[in-house]
Amino acid sequence: MEGSRSVPEQTDGLTLRTKIPLSEHTSFRIGGNAAYWAEISSVPMLAAALELCRSYGLPYFVLGRGSNVLAADEGYTGMILHLGDAFSAVSLHGNTLVCEAGASLAKTAKTAAQAGLTGMEGLSGIPGTIGGALYMNAGAYGYEMKDIVTECQYMDDAGGLHTLPAETLALSYRHSRFMEQPGIITSVTLTLRPGDKDSIHAAMQELLARRSEKQPLQYPSAGSTFKRPAGSYASLLIDQCGLRGMRVGGAQVSEKHAGFVINTGGATCRDVLTLCEKVRQTVKEQTGYTLELEPVILGKAGDTACS
Ligand SMILES: Cc1cc2nc3c(=O)[nH]c(=O)nc-3n(C[C@H](O)[C@H](O)[C@H](O)COP(=O)(O)OP(=O)(O)OC[C@H]3O[C@@H](n4cnc5c(N)ncnc54)[C@H](O)[C@@H]3O)c2cc1C
View (cartoon, rainbow, N blue to C red):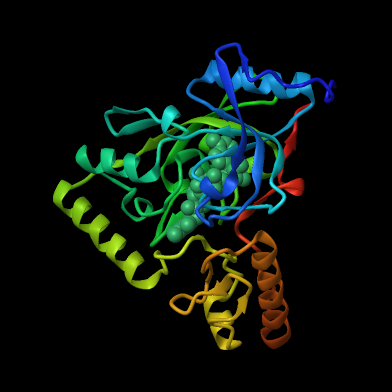
């Protein structure tokens, strides 16, 4: 480990950017600067970025669209490996889509719909990447990543590439094996079913409309702030406890949907975490249910050290 050397900004076809505001790359619009930012556009570039992390003793964090991330006010001292639009090819092979991890769910669902393939309608409005969606096993309206993923490819810390079948991914409610066994998802294979194009488009439109009717989409947030506790719904419990509209600084429990904490303007990570703790305590005291945060914290506790 040689943490005291200064990290070169250009190496091996990789250009590093420095001091990037995380508030501009997360849907919550919260977070200080990331010390280093690598915009990944290929598998070799990802391997080069990991090599740099290894040789300079830098921690890294994999970021997709930042739609389920709460970034620390102090920022991040490591390297952000961003898998987004530059790494987002989607190719169609019969009923199968092979997607680079940075492809958005919206783009992938559109490709599926245009090909007359059903199975992604409820996922099309989730504002994340395919990689982030697999990591979180994202789902909505009865659709879930686990029902359509057949295989994925990931890179380990040492730059090795591996292919895993879906059965080994430990996919369950907002859970995948990558939460316990780190790996950077590079590509995901989805297998869909033939359907009627018009019905697929109609279902997508209907579910998008339902989202904007029920969710406070005009405010920055990370979507549902708490996971669904077994036997109930977080929004229902929060509402029952009279917490709709509760505020700490710029963070507020949405008036429109009590399951969302929103940034009404200038909210800090501290505001959000303080508000969430108050909500958790009140819900525990009044209902007995324990609420667990859904967004991932990017900051001291949220990184992976390269071995
Ligand atoms: C308005 C709104 C509505 C939402 N609605 C829903 C919903 O209906 N259902 C739902 O499930 N979620 C929902 N979300 C949450 C979020 O969009 C999903 O969890 C999404 O899948 C996250 O994808 P991302 O690319 O933004 O991941 P990020 O937020 O960037 O990252 C999330 C986690 O995934 C990891 N990760 C990202 N990419 C990779 C990769 N390639 N390899 C390994 N790890 C990776 C990150 O390190 C991080 O730990 C919503 C969010 C918002 C803001």
